Image (cartoon, rainbow, N blue to C red; front, top):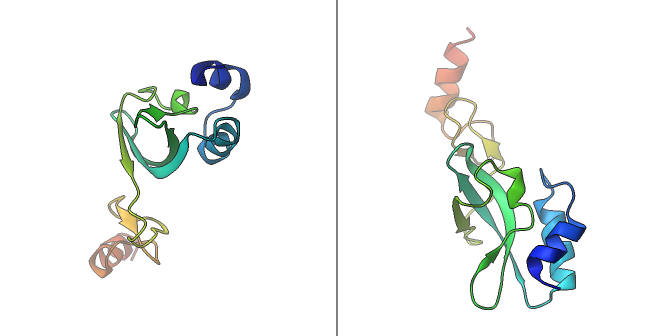
Length: 115
């Protein structure tokens, strides 16, 4: 069975299911490597995501259909040595680490709007 046939027969829901779908697909195809990182969709922009890579280095994304760009965006592997973001800054939308803001300045600017 090809990867695309497996995806068609085994992946019904794609939105928010990338971690589960890639784990399940890797069980069926042990030669695939699971990768986590970010997918840049030209319409939705940067999103945390999981996908697979075949032995030749080709991306196999069982949940690419969740994106308006259908997997035609840019995949960037997460650098595991980097700190894990805890969310996105409420002021600018960039990744935040340990709070709801990427910097003290953005927290102050956000709070000014509500005082």
